[in-house]
Image 1 (cartoon, rainbow, N blue to C red):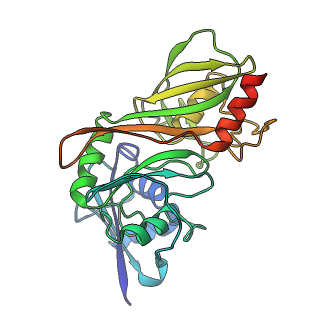
Image 2 (image 1 turned 180 degrees about the vertical axis):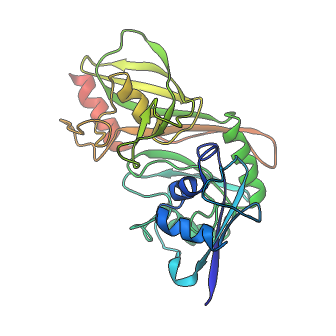
Length: 306
């Protein structure tokens, strides 16, 4: 039987997790039971060595999963328009639109950003395997904004290191509910997978890792605030969970609040506004900004008019 190898490098979000859980979190279309069987048959290795389900992952570990060919769908290039903010031989920074999944996963094997990138770039880094070529980090389906994608492994490793040591400057803009007493603040609350729903993240759960979000109020509108958030760490759903935790859920967030909104939001009003990083080849510091999307600006205009 023909087979394919699905591989990825463990990042800090997966560090410390049991192998079966960490691999399940990364490969969302593989069930825990399937992963357990693959571990027993030796078809999952870490750093080229056999493991058991109790093996714990470490940042930088190289995980390889051998799957039969029919278990991995073909990821086809698709001629989907891209809003390119920056591009050179090493990387491309795109402005991801709302309602677009970053990479293929269970139920989304076409129409993703990766499908569009494969048509545009052809060559992308292979460090995160065949389902996530070029992808070093991701943003949620309904979050818009700047996303760095790497065209080769050298660039991928450089950007991944900067993400791990928190040296990439990542600024987000959001409209949240309620007014703040202080103009600036910091949320320092550890995040991990919810014990009630593994698709959600939660504060102070078993296995939670340190998560820090700095925020400042750009404009106050009484019942709503327009804020800028700077990520010190980059946990899954970090801003959304942290803002809900302090009583200021992101407007339109259907997962961490009621999602009800008097405005047309189509999910959370959260935008990856700027990414600042050291270029992997030139060593130059770059800051790439993604313009606020039209729907977001229209909400701000209504709020400003009162």
